Length: 298
Image (cartoon, rainbow, N blue to C red; front, side):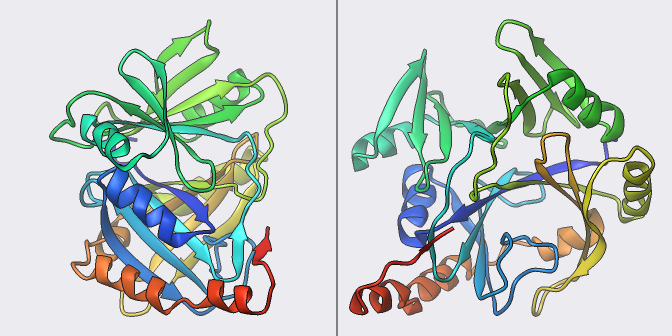
């Protein structure tokens, strides 16, 4: 399973401008690519919405060797209800800590050289106050589970992740496909996992030839397949094939064929400008204010 890679986590965002400030100016990430779509995604990448939406990939470096964030924005939806499913993304960057302090972005010290920052929408980011490493600063994504044993079996035995650390006291299991990739931490919350309407999705790649086998395995084991193998088009870019799964707590998991995804995910030098242009042209906030209305809350 060493051929499988952790790619990104999908966040739904209601305010693109504030969100861009957080990722660019506070965390110090780069806009890797920005894409606009006229209708909803066949694999519900933007959630259960069929209207116009955008996707912005942000990270510390190219998607080939960095775990990044996918920011999906549905025009007309101003906010989403947070659940208890996403427990945080941890990254190492003293620069991000000093950026937050300089910009007055709220920080809470939660441990030795560890700060909690909230992205717009309420998503938790844990900043390790140490020099940013030369490789990917993103260390792990933490998801809530209701039954640690069942979830560990799913992610390790069925998806092929390696268990790297168990912490009985904290009720966590840390796992990953390789030591050098962003890890997945499962945290037993001892109750039901609520996904709210802000629920995200974690994405991995695997060789294209493994996708039908993965789907067949999940069918055989009676686990949920949200979207059977499907091709997704991006205007002017590579077409990718994906299978969308759900783990025992209904966390959404995307597996995409690696070969085509490497083509699709090439860094676009105009990504920054495309995002700024889209935000400048998005008059939805003004329209709602002028008509004395509020954007929808999902």
